[in-house]
Length: 237
Image 1: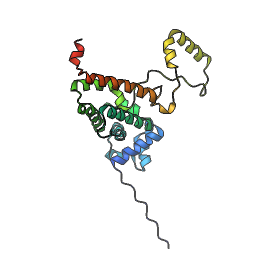
Image 2: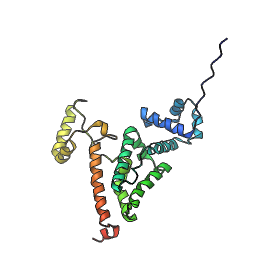
Image 3: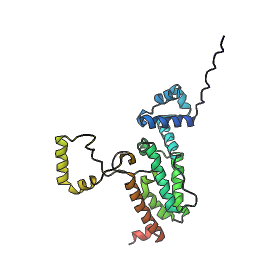
């Protein structure tokens, strides 16, 4: 009589495994598919088992945000502040490009999770350690805004490619009318093609445009720092 094979040991469930699996599920199927039921099925457990580790869907999403923020690489040690900030931002952008669902989830979070707070604290610290005043750093953070997370809100939507679909008569007429009424917008919005793989979310916020705007912003911040800028003196002009 042959020996019966012992059942494979089940991997112990913990919060880290739950969150990592949720991130993988979102990567594969989108954040909208991340439910307690679907996640439990992915883990091979009953849904109630998850509640020992995450108390709700909102806490699950907060935890997923902390997981991806943990993937943002720290800047090189002793790098000049501008290089350090630039690399931190571009690393955040690379993370969002790996996790296409993450931007929308980030935008919906109302609570500052420990991971979010730690990232913001370290980001602010790059300026303070470089000798920036608290005053200037405050305004710098307002100016940088969502760029610290690797994205900005898109201004223009890319027109659909002719290779993907053909325009109907109504759409062509609407575009012609737009071109007549708002010629400058149409000229800019259709000025150049964009590489779809470089876009975070929809629209024309491709990698070149993101870095172009980031560099302009950092150059001006550097000038203000060197000039000893303060809110009080700026308001008094």
